[in-house]
Length: 402
Image 1 (cartoon, rainbow, N blue to C red):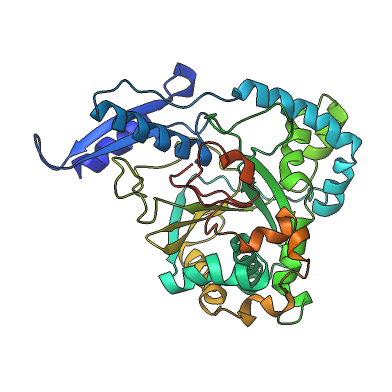
Image 2: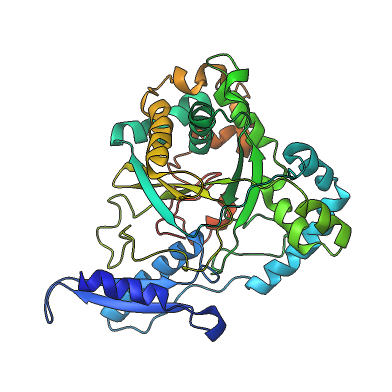
């Protein structure tokens, strides 16, 4: 218990206003000898999921070099976060010119006059885990068979679950991508540590509007229709120089539910020779006690030890623990009932691409790449230099929490 208390205290000690953004703690099984565990804490302002992989790569390289009596020599640097933020401001103006404001207004709709406020401050978490066989189907068999990605399947399960849970049709959900899209040819963020997250709302198709076997295809189409993988939403809302544009974006409906598939934790047995790897355990609360949560219900998914785990964090003013448990089971059922030809997900309507192999695009090839874990809306180019051994296509493997 002393270790857990020390970890939670270190987590709670981070202070943005004082510049205290990171902590390092070392725990040993005994006071002198035995295995040690390093706890490395960062405020989210300076680290995201991709940043953790950069840091993990660097600490292993540096440790191996020092162990051989060498001075640490890491790879070259890439574009600073400042350059990316400046490019985002330019991107916002381009998005206006391309009519993205109108697209978001049509796709999301206006904020309801009676939009609820849930600010009880009492937050609880429930978890649902899928076995390794079901996880393998969602990660590999389903994408290869039906040219989809795991987030398509999980969001299909969400659409089904919410319709059965509270009757919601066309669920508005906030998705999160890594945000490191290739918006400027001069930018290279492959070795840049920072928070590049792109968050954006999407309205899922109504589960009851489709025949069995077609919902998965409809969800995939909805995600593929989002411009720039959602990057323009935040750029327009926060970075546009036009007050009118920012106001129009702020007047859009906001999701009460967020979903973030964060990918695979650890190296899945490939990193046994590494000094450091990720142990996906929690240390204290991930949010400060006084933080106002953007959504009263947040769902996150990660893969560890070959099993997919979904966590549902909910404000108790929004739903009870029993209701959250029921929602988790409603999400799990269509996932667990999905064999390699999962009728429950609606996959028969999603066919293999018929494009000739010689002319396949990155999009049409995405389902056939070896990537088995990722974050929604990621980009393979960000890993091309530093992570040549990682398996990545349109998705980005994450090996540590963001």
